[in-house]
Length: 547
Picture 1 (spheres, rainbow, N blue to C red):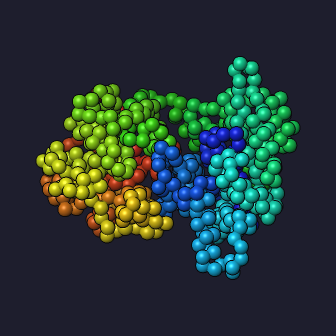
Picture 2: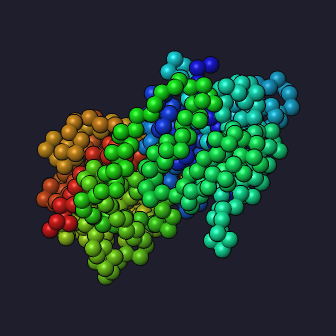
Picture 3: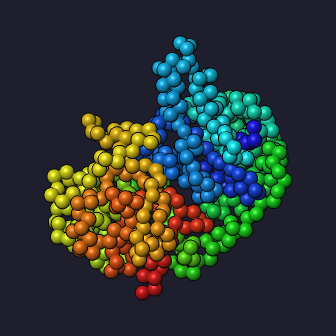
């Protein structure tokens, strides 16, 4: 088999940064001239995160092929600049769902279906699918979600234990990320959490090859030697993942420690130097902005910033492209009213209204959009944000006082946004019904679709080409019955489906920068290649700040 496998597990507690560590290692190996992919194995029972509450799970990242995945796939794409797909994420629910379907179909010939071997075999097949085909990567990094000791994660850990035996030590590497806390009162780091985590891993038959220590400050060499001794790894196989000001510093920090070199030696990868000029320039540009802009994100999931992870990063990318520091001000749209909108948005040079589902907080978003339009503040609306922009324009410019979305008011006389059943997309597994008795299950428009951009528009000025591909995640669309009347009032439809059946981008020509898009451009933004719309939005905010 051409592909080498690296398994990344975590211990002690969650949110240590396995996804960032895996993505950073992948970037280093890629900088050594290797092709790399990354896969996330999530232990939860949901088939995918598509129906999960953003407050619990955070952002749902959407791939080109329409898979609704964990937000870590966003890290993978941003660090590797390689598109992910349904092959790069799976869950316990998806694995059990497939095994049960096979059992119902009779594939197991009446045998007793068990966790071992049937569930573990399905997991192994999912992992090994990355190595199939002529374009199989040189290295596949597999991140196992959760922490060692979680009962739902045991089948995944058993599967990677078996893969080590199946593929051989030269083709598999186990990396364990743990917490090494620093106790200020004692004035020292503590290694017991790491020792206990490794002991838990050893109890299920997995010996880590490398220990990656998550810490607030650098660990002394003597402490590394202690961890190596008690965790049975090489003395030069203990590395630090220290807190950084900017997450894009992590690959360079790993490189300074020789992390990628150790991995290459242990997996017998080609001896090449990593070329990190682009990463060094990126970090330098992040650290040396020439200005600052403040962007208000008016949404309803602002209490959990992870719900807007890709959005946050795309705005940062736009700042890097314009050499400005982007300060993000999260505004709860439920609390925005006509009376306090000016106070909530005070001091902001740009206003962004992101996507979401449901009516909660929508009127606050519409009020923020009205304020941006009337005060010539750069505005960017995404998905629901674009729909709210259309509603606001219809109400306050076109004179349709009760204009609304069919999602929010099915009885409105002017449903400028409506549920368009003709194009229901079933390329991916159907989304579970969100409302009992509703017909919304499986009706999301998911994945990449083409968009035709009209010349002499702000959208075309950003893209500089007529046809683009963007990713979608929504079920309501602009109602074409209102295209003419809103167009006569000044709303420009600068992006549509190639056959013009669907509106993809709207904008206002007599405004410094007012653009709304039905798709999610944040999913395709990269730190070294900011998405054109985010780049131009921040450029407009920068120009507004100078005024």
